[in-house]
Image 1 (spheres, rainbow, N blue to C red):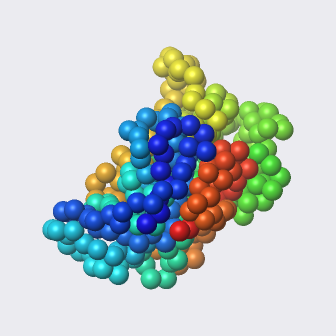
Image 2: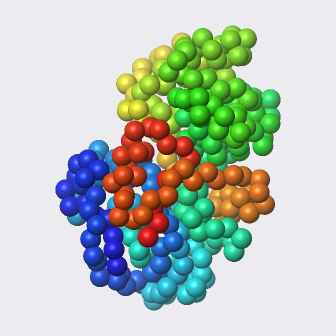
Length: 323
């Protein structure tokens, strides 16, 4: 079977297509025939060496497909079951993968496996951000950076369903309409106008209750300055680069602010929480109450192009690789 490997970290050219033996599941594992693999920024960090991995390694950690073989001691799954996963290292860009059975979630029959692959990491991220890290409520105002990105589009929809006023940031006119369509009440093109001035104008100088920031360096300081007293900065990504060090005293001076740097891994570590989060997310999709935008489909062998496009910042929604 074919897999995308990194022998030596570097740019997109470090992604190479390799022929690998069909993987065999060990105890507590299953083999899955992959229908689609999700492409994420963490894959880029692994490929580049920003997040060190022992080489060689199979790139990716998210996907969906059909169970084709069971290892010993696996219960609750059968050959032919449709499953999806995220945050499973080594279960990514390949035609077949082996994954721990307790990290897989069932996919309802009325959800396309490509959609399931596209929503696991970003969708569960949006879910925990809106419901657990800062449980947003009706009447509050949230600032969502990169509102037309994969997490942003889903997060805007979840917040809108809660009755939250959403102010989104985007980088182009095309993305303005996407963010509005996902539920953003106001959209700011932060590269062409002052983010701080515009959000203060939109909130009559009051600022926002929460900032959900997946951009990092380019928007973090502005976001902190826009929080109301006792507001919360949720820094969940760094697409533009890492933020500078923060003096805790500045949080006091800003109005007893809260700052958190969450990760999906800590919000799905318990299997019951993983199942509950994924189940709610997938059923919203099945009922047509949550729209998943697949912004690009690439053949497995064109993984390098997918990385190049994602790094360039012009993509919207989710990118997937299809074997």
